[in-house]
Length: 293
Image (cartoon, rainbow, N blue to C red; front, side, top):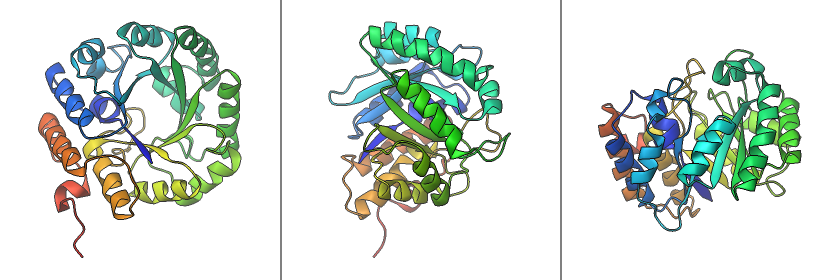
């Protein structure tokens, strides 16, 4: 089982801007936990997400731990150019299954975004990099309500035909439930055929249940965010991502290996609390790292 830590990007972009040095400190702390993948920064326009305006500076100052795969989120080809120039080789780009959410997020239709992603994939491949396409609102939209799994499947077919290296499914507002997870995977390519990652928010408290369901379906890669940081600025009511330490704690008790040191991860979560200046929602932070028996 592999976890991608998204707190430095997905988490901090939803907080008031924090100093560059604090971002670097959190990124370095997470790099020492044993997590195998980290989404480090995003290369978006500073006017859209001012919290990520210092992406180049953060990445230049961060310690690159051997064995950790670092990635960056980009909104379009311009962002991809910045990420490649900064030295990233693993890029992620988001398109929403919901047309309304896509317009709120990047001010264009889903179809327009897909056309841009086609060129972006070619651009990144020519530079020797890889592209993961994240399909946001895969389980429901705050504006349109239910999203048909067949619509998500159509987007995935398109991006795979255009050369995407990986796909991910985003539960942007925490609408996913085990039933919705099963329904989606009846429509989309199985994770045994296409490298697949799931990104769950815990808005309605179903995050861990969704991860267990996806594990049963063969998915072994998931996003999580230290302390439960995160959300979506264009999804009203969305709370944070599933907390990384909660996922690691649950899996350790199930004797499923993640390679993550839970004590170091909790230290990183405490640092995240200090950086953002408030208590984070992680139950492990409140109750401790071990379940009494």
